Amino acid sequence: MTAKPARKPLVAGNWKMHNNHFEAIALTQKLAFTLVDRDFVATDIAVLPPFTDLRSVQTLIEGDRLRLLWGAQDVSEHEDGAYTGDISARMLAKLGCQFVLAGHSERRQYHHEDDALINAKVKRILDRAMTPILCVGESLEVRRAGGYLELVQAQLDGGLDGLTAAQVAGMVVAYEPVWAIGTGEVATPEDAQEVCQAVRKRISAVHGDATATGTRILYGGSVKADNMPAIMAEPDIDGALVGGASLDPGEFVGICRYRNPRGASP
Ligand code: 13P
Image (cartoon, rainbow, N blue to C red; front, top):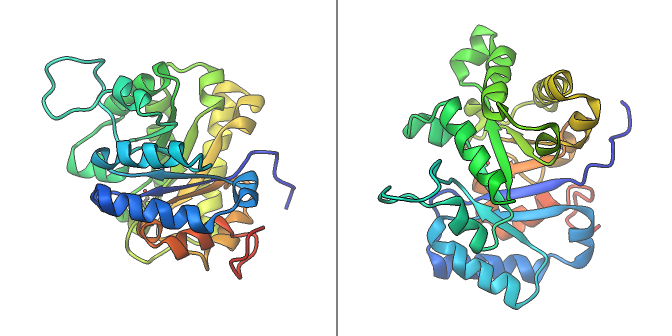
């Protein structure tokens, strides 16, 4: 196995629709008590709370000068206007968000988001100088039928359509096989590596090697502290997008400290 290029690992906790703003403050404080400077030097660590928690989380992190990063789980494809219930990229940028998810499989599945819509969201996020985390991944049926690399490539091409090489180099792509999300069934490190490598190869084919070397590619799907070290040993996996385990501060910190499975800071 070749040594990994110097991409800083990223662990992002997608809280999904969990935690009111009081609970969000409590969870962020618990992370702040446990994580130390060395953790943040080794790994970028982000939380992605629901919209209603963002202001509280921002205020706590900025007020206490914590090194945690934060972001949102979705954004409108529109700049602003009469779109009841939607949240714009401008609003998220004003809340100091560094990251915004685009195309999470739960948005694709429950809100019928397609690649063109997700691409429009990615562009809004970039327009406001935030980093999109573009999520791609196949269903169990596609995995069994064998067309998963083609499907992921189509999602990637659709999500990145019209972007410059510099924009793609600064982005994060998260490979989240739907069959591994919230199921306890984690992809094997080899399965995850196969797709993450294919993602990087595709970026290289479209935008060149230098771009592909910069893009951070995460794995997501039932990541826990005990399976994280093997996942991170793979050359094209630069971190994790964590759902359920990000709600448990001990487990989340354990994931962030994957270099030392006993949980001590690096
Ligand atoms: P789980 O870690 O709960 O499987 O969720 C993964 C996910 O969807 C993160 O975005």
